[in-house]
Image (cartoon, rainbow, N blue to C red; front, side, top):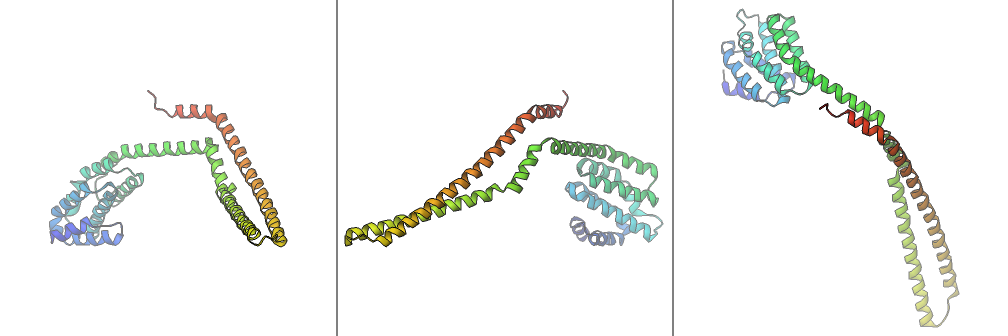
Length: 270
């Protein structure tokens, strides 16, 4: 057995079934080195990050299944891992904080029980090690779900704000108003430029260009109308925002006392 190769394979296993199966097949080839294999896997299991610990539990499980299918009489891997499982499950229960990972461990234990790999009393002890952490995570999950439901039910202002963003689309309306103001500015600039040209022509040529005067008057009237329309639109837009703000403030004050009582109820009992 190449220990370096084994260490590398164990260290680099992934969640892919082929990765675990390939490493298990390599280990199963050397039942006479079961003690060394179990020692290497134990070290990787203990030192692994919490999210990778389940991979080493799956690897142990696969090695045990391979040995069962090989129908060896002495079951060296079952014995070697059986001596280490209590320590490994204690570490697993302490480190893992995902209830789904704990449920995977329970599934592995059920399979060992079904296949008569270990004695039921021993497997019950392993379940007993996992149970407190499982109960703790289940309770935390229940509290989080309860708080989430209460928050969604009580915080109508948040829901209304989301509806405002989705339906009223004030950001886009504001963009249109700013664009209109920029257009007004451009029209005013054009008017001033044309007026300056007219004044220079009057001073230099000492004549009045009535056609240009008519064009300036028409341009001025168009700019005035455009400006008036956009001022009205802007006022309507901000009046809508003001009414909406007043409504939100009113609802906030109406719910204030209820919110205070709600968050008081969430404080831990001294």
